[in-house]
Amino acid sequence: MDYYSKIAEGYNELHKREQLDKIKTIFKNVYISNEETTLDVGCGTALYAYLFRNYKGIDPSKGMLEQSNSDVRLGKAEEIPFEDSTFDNVISISAIHNFNDYKKGVEEMERVSKKKVVITLLKKAKKFEEIKEHLKDYREVDHPIDAIFIKNVK
Image (cartoon, rainbow, N blue to C red; front, side, top):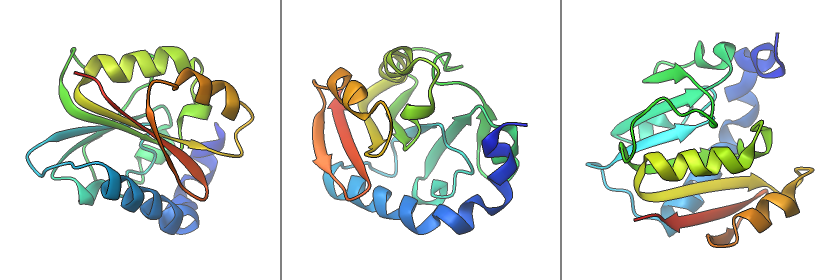
């Protein structure tokens, strides 16, 4: 059993405030209309899905997805199971440091996005500087826990 499946049942209680604060910071810096579609890569329990009208999420942890009542499916960032330019926006909140291949994950997120990609990266992540360097063509917004990277893709 993977780590996230083990903590899935209590994840929202532990991380809800922190995750919602990150989403609030994103909404202050990125306009996402109710008509736009959003894919959340590494969505976990999809605890903030209710903030988006047209939301889908993917996550590799079955246990985390079982805690969600949203439109989510099993999937990995490196192999996003959607066609090119399917979503207006693609977000990934504090997940990129867990990707097996973050470069491929970013490539896939850009592939399925029509407009914007927003990635938050945990500042305490071991690969923070390496991943930040890879995202150098993204606009960076500071947040106390994560760095937030925003890119218009098309």
